[in-house]
Length: 192
Image 1: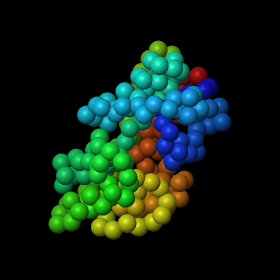
Image 2: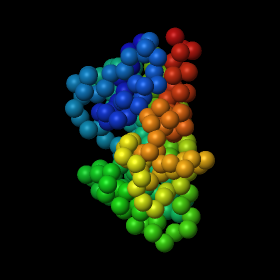
Image 3: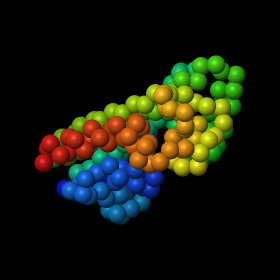
């Protein structure tokens, strides 16, 4: 089975490929010649995943899936949420995003947060959604050098390390994206 993953984020592609059986081949946007920055104009994580999957299906005709993820912080009423990648501006810089978030949480006692991923799958004319959530908290300084995005400041409940301090395999086992991809894989294996 061949599916397009509507992303050029090499970190996400690598993470997802690590979870897939050999029977499922993933093509990136680059692989299909899509160099367009697909607009993410929805006001929900679910909406953005659907927009990206719809774009690929409509313009390229491939069965595909797309994801959108966000960090939702309780003390900030769910922000940055759908704007997580561009929280500090359109340049989508991880360091700037973390700096802004840490500044906004500086005097807050409640540091509870969750990461949420929604994957939208377009296959054989049907659309399906898969959601993964991991709860945790935002720590007050970066720790670790692995991962990407907010990983150096996010610590999942029950862990004493951030996502940036654990291996990709450990992260996949507990992360929001790992949970959503697991549901996707289970669905695809049953749908064969």
